[in-house]
Image (cartoon, rainbow over all chains, first blue to last red; front, side, top):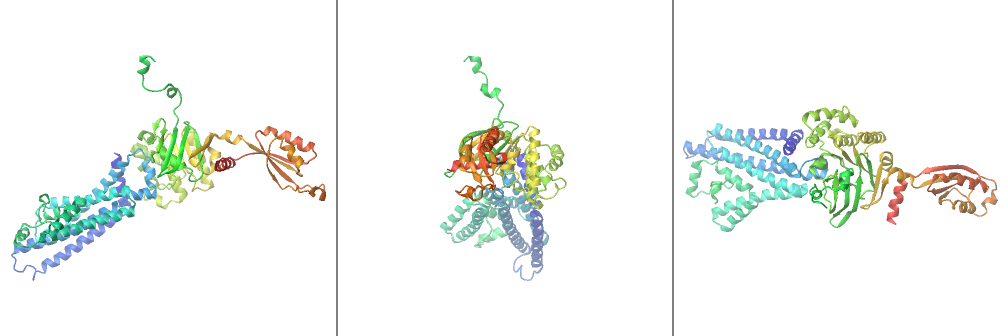
Length: 260
Length: 338
């Protein structure tokens, strides 16, 4: 009950501070620009298809458009998760506003969990709407059907919620600034380790692969993203990987549960 | 002890008969990384009392209040609110709290803040709706409840803080410096509010360094200095303990002083011209001097008057002065620092 009160209060705060309005306006702008860009590329079909068949070029285009779009959404959602939560507790402690609230018959855990619930809900809705709109746009433009949009979207939500959880926890023990430094470094580290792991895979370098795995265990946001991206890739595109092509460096080419 | 007696619930005879104190602390000690801010603090506040908790900045007042609210855990010792451990949910339900810095979520409106705080306090939607205008009126914010706290002045913010402290009809209200941002009119209103809370049977724990405020409104006080209670007692007793008598005479000399010293300590001699030769140089001139005596009993006044007149001095005034809380406070604090 108290948890829901805090969650409601946190959503009210996001509305009142125009977080949701600003987010909605910028997201619409992003979606509009992205769709327009890919629409223009798709209909400028002179060299794009090349020697590929219609089905192959559609799969290629649909995969690239979906992956790039979702990659951007994943980045934006990760930033959103970190920005809204980095001072969610520490800021309240610093301002002193928490004193009056915690003096109520309210457990500290209820306050933290209530805030987490609200933010996780906001992020879930954000990822759901953005990923859904993007995949729909890709389909409308190129006719490409994403193999498993639901799994991809749910895993993307999970990736951002992992970041949210780490950052909200950090906010209970660190100052806003220190927590910001820590969580954004972790976010960047996960991204870098994902690239290292990809290159390690292409070069069959065991040490690089191990670095990637170790960092993913510490902060799995990038690994989860790679799992999500797998469900967007066209089977035709995946089939091309057996011909010695290493694929796109920012996506995962195997289903998430099967490891390397 | 018989078997039947030992089968009873473990409640001592004292607890059954005595009134459970609104606040009770036993041997509270708090140290932050080796710096001790509270030493062995023991207090008891009876229900219905307005209790003043006085001390300099940094004496440990706010730490004590935070321990009582369960915001800070004591290093050792125990604090109870109506017999419940401080910080217990049920204890907190019965307490209203105005924090020292009175910072609230400023994106809320005044009414929104009260509604938010009323939820965990256990008030239903109907109760909250009915009580919001009533409390807003009571703290003097009528008509401003739908404005955002961000737009409030310091004094208005403090008023809305008072409103959230009393919103859920607590049995005990802890006010940490409730008038620090208020002008004289606002302070008077807060005093009236505290008195009306007392009339409703609500216990008020007033944390303040504004001694005149405390003097006007509190029944009992405890004075705390560097983490220790240096005095506690009823306000009248504290104020009536030592008084002063100001004796205004035409001149002062050693003879008069030694005569007066038989009754009381001479605290000060002002405006006297007792240097040798002065009396001779201007005989008959009223130099005008005031001798301040510390007396335990103002009944001494006629005796002092008689002494002065019989020895041939002219008496212009004899004014009994009650010492203010501030003077008593300063004596206690300075005494402790010696």
